[in-house]
Structure formats: structure tokens, C-alpha cells
Image (cartoon, rainbow, N blue to C red; front, side):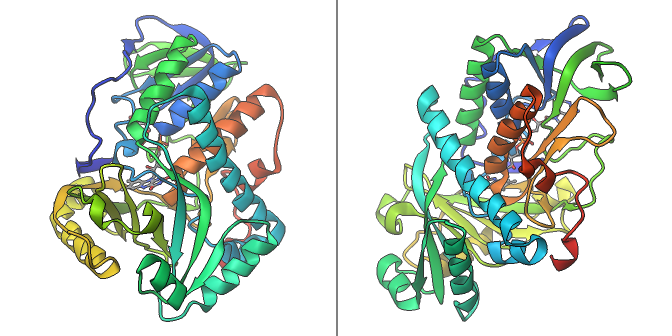
Amino acid sequence: MRGGCSPRFAVAGQPVRREVGENIKCDALIIGAGITGSLIAERLTRQGLNVAIIDRELPGRGSTAASTSMLLWEIDRSLTELTEAYGFERASRAYRASLAAVTGLKSLVLQLGIACDMRDKDSLYLAAGDTSAELLGEHQLRMRAGLPGDFLDHAPLLDGYGIARAGAIVSPGAADADPMQLVRGLLRLAVTRGARLFEGEAVEFDTAARSVGVQLNNGRQIEARSVVLATGYVMPDIVLSTIQTVSSSWAIATTPQPQNIWKDAAMIWENRKDYLYARTTRAGRIIIGGEDSEEEIEPERRDRLILEKSRALAQKLASLWPVANTEIEFRWSGTFDTTRDGLPLIGPVPDAKGIYAAYGYGGNGITFSFMAAQLIGDLIAGSTSPLLRDFALDRNDGMAAL
Ligand SMILES: Cc1cc2nc3c(=O)[nH]c(=O)nc-3n(C[C@H](O)[C@H](O)[C@H](O)COP(=O)(O)OP(=O)(O)OC[C@H]3O[C@@H](n4cnc5c(N)ncnc54)[C@H](O)[C@@H]3O)c2cc1C
């Protein structure tokens, strides 16, 4: 799922995992203990369920460890694009849900006291081309949807942020965090509430009976009333979706340079498909990622490109923020799937009773992980939401416009 070395590949502080030594039963089995599985484990244990979590790797060591962890509520597809595809009401519902998810994640972390370096941040959505007309239209539509933010033309952007682009939307409500610390904190909490954390691989699913039977690679079976797939970019065969595409992304972290950070250390990204994204860390490193490719997806080829891509990212950093020291301390790559509409795949797996999918793809992956925890938690508790139709695995309406 990822290669190279990001600033958070350390494994210290991992919660203890056990082998599944006998067949077991539980209310809910979560497959995958990355950020998605961990948030779902917190949610379902809070609902009082008897939860088991299984992962074939160390928790968080899938794509979560590669994440730059910008917690943005702005979705990879603009509100303008989503409105063209789905109409204003549905598009703005996704945006408002995304804003509520980042707000909810921040307050959850605060309330649970999880130390994960979470910081409230503004986001700066930069025009990628010569004009800011598209961003101005996007800003007006966001205002109509009741979303916060201000439009900055070239001059105020240059004056306020020292960034020479045609324009930008600056929005409150984003955040950044250390995703590995967040995973560990959530899992430790779930375990103290009685969740069982196992090492192992789910290889087969049997949905014929009242409960779901999940066959493991060591021959044992886990029987669960609900099974949540939080397997990141490795979907089991029972999930069929035609709207996601596998791609790769690369990122670098510079040496600490707290004296060189832009205004408010805002999260930066751009109005283009393969956008550049940048954040900072508390120590003053600049993390910048992008250079995404849908061609270089095979892990060895992807990782062989780390050096070349990291040089390209350093150059892009120099042109975005000329005062930056571009000395690279960490460089890495990871699988980074996207969906055509930029929205997640969350909800019941068609034709697989009792199995729910929690796939938050794209640059809002973690925001969507939080949404998945809420929506699936509610669904298991018996309530539903129109968002489950919007994020359904078998949706295909509106795609022609995207
Ligand atoms: C370079 C990069 C930058 C990114 N930047 C951002 C960002 O700034 N903001 C953001 O929100 N998102 C970002 N993302 C996306 C985000 O990281 C992902 O959406 C998120 O980490 C997905 O978490 P997950 O828990 O769903 O998947 P993973 O972390 O991949 O976890 C899935 C787990 O499932 C386990 N698993 C899979 N199959 C099985 C099985 N059959 N049995 C048992 N276990 C199994 C795996 O071992 C793995 O541990 C970025 C991703 C990359 C690669």
C-alpha cells in the first residue's frame, strides 16, 4: 500500500494483537485496523456492541501510515462539479456532511483526549490556472449552500499569504493530525471498552445464514451479526464497484523550518484534478504531496519513482513557496484510489446481507472514514440517512457529467 519512509512509520505503542485460536462470535467484526477500522471500532464499542477487529498487518500500516492527514471538508470534486452531476441539493448535502465530519472528528478527539497532534487549520484552495473565475463561481455556490469561506483575488492572496496565484478560497474548519497516533489512541480505547483485536486475514464470506461467517487464513471462523469492511484499497471480491480508480501519490517532508511557514500554516491544495497538496507539522516541516499517477500503480514501479517524484515535488514547493528550504528528510509513496465523483463508498454491500463497506477514497479519505463510522454505526443501530443513497456502492447516475 505504501513505500519509502514517512515521518510516522514508527510502530512503537501498537496495541497488542492476538491470534484467533478458536472460532469466535461477536456482534460486529471490523476487517482492517487502519484509520477507518479504528474510527468504526470506537463508534461501535460506544454503542455497546461486542466488537472484534482483525488485520493482517500491524494496525495503521496500510495506506494510513502514508497519509499526509490533511483533514479537509472540501471534496476533491468541487461543489460546482457535483452540482452539475447530481443537482444542488444532493451536492450541497455531501459538502455539508463533509464539514460536519471534520467538525465531529475534531470534537471526538478532544472529548476522548487522544494525543494525535490535531490542530485546527484554515484551508487555502488555490486557482491552478491564470484566472480565478472558476473559484469565484465555486465560492458563490458554496455561500448559497451555507458553507463558510472567503474568496481572495490575486492581490489579497499575495498580500495576505505571499502566494502568487490568480486567486483562492480560504475556508475555516479544516485540521491536521498524526494519523498513526490517532489509530493507536482509538484502538486502545476500543480495547479498553472490550473490543478484541486480532491478527489475521479474512479470506471468505458466507452470508447464507442469519449471521455472516468470515473464514480466516488460519482455518478459524468468526461469526458476526454485522461485518464492516475497512480494508482500504484492497477490496474483497464480494465488493463490486465500477466508479473507483487505483492511483498512486507521492509525498515529501522537509527538514524543520518553523521560520519559513506561510500564514497560519493553512492546508494548501489546488483546483485541478491532480492537485498539489501541502501542510506543515508542529516542528515546522513542510509536507507536500501530489504527482499522482493512474499508470504507475504497481508497488515496485511506484516505489522506484520515489526519488524522481520527490525531486519534482521539491521543485513545485520552490515555485509555490520560494522562501522554503527544499531539503528533503522523508520521501514516500502510497496507493491513493479515487472515485469518479470524489465521494466515498459507504453502506450495505449489495447482495451480501450483514456486510457493510467503509471505503473513503481520495484526498478526503480520513474525513470519509469518520462519516463511515457515523453512518454505519447508525445503520447497525437501525436508522438510515439519505447520504447512504448518495454514497451507495452501486450508484452510477450522474457519472456522465464527471
Ligand atoms: C500519499 C497519501 C496521502 C494522503 N493524504 C491524505 C490526506 O491528506 N487526507 C486524507 O484524508 N486522506 C489522505 N490520504 C488517503 C488516506 O490516507 C486513506 O483514505 C486512509 O488512510 C484509508 O484508511 P483505511 O483505514 O481505510 O485503509 P488502510 O489504512 O489501508 O487500512 C486497511 C487495513 O485493512 C487491512 N486488510 C486489508 N484486507 C484485509 C483482509 N482481507 N483481512 C485482514 N486485514 C485486511 C490492511 O492490512 C490494512 O491495515 C492519503 C493517502 C496517501 C497514500
